[in-house]
Length: 350
Image (cartoon, rainbow, N blue to C red; front, side, top):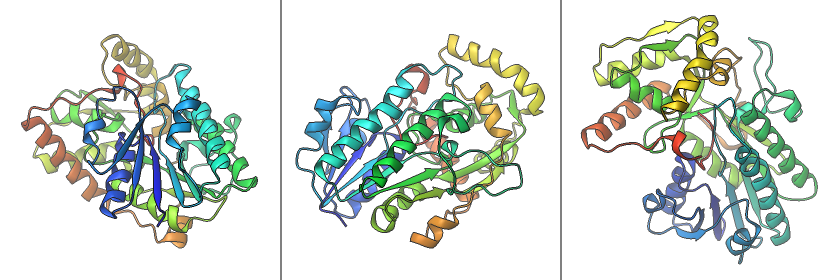
């Protein structure tokens, strides 16, 4: 282990899971937290917080004040969006913020950087062909602003590694699981489903992974990941229909939405996105999300399994835990904040 861990995006879904695991290992953890972040009190009391922004050089200087070769930086911060027009902040945080962080890592000669990218940064292969980390990374090779921003940031990290920084990259697939207080795409869909307010779902599927397994994979990568190497942290491919069936069974719900064919969903998605934006509702049914569900979701985590024994748990367990948590939240009368109200600084995309 390292003497100190600097975690960005620590109040997000993934970042909080990482911080909690580090605290359980009795590590010294510092978290970069936005001013007035409503989730700051959810961090373990042992975590030292530094108010700042990955895009602000001055605040990063404070965050890195005592960083050295015995410091490990875990960069989870990033805006996650399935919107068609996410706005300039997406690139400012995902690309510009990563560039600022890399400058500090190299200036302080930190011992290790683990950058949380996304499988969306990896160019898609024809269906049936396994997707691995061994590829070229470029915004021009992927579709959608979110994917392009993560591909550009990934390029920056690989360039820094080529210049001598001990940096490894992890590529999570669709992160789901309990404790998603910010309400990511699938969490928002599942909550609507359990409330009987999801009239339509979409055929198709993707690779989804438990947030707890990704957090464990990140910590394993910090110890054993090779410099300049990337590791896919995927889970299991599953259709949306099957996911809702498992959650419904766990919650003892008989409600079943109509599953639209992908072609019809593509036609309806622009309208649904505009209506969700107008009504300030969470975005999960957009042209980008539909394209994802129609894409090749065959991601191989063989490299991570070989290097640091990464192994995702069964998806049924994740979905049952998620359903139990959502029900407990509803019974406790706790409203979950929506991503649409404010860009969420979090770890990876769902």
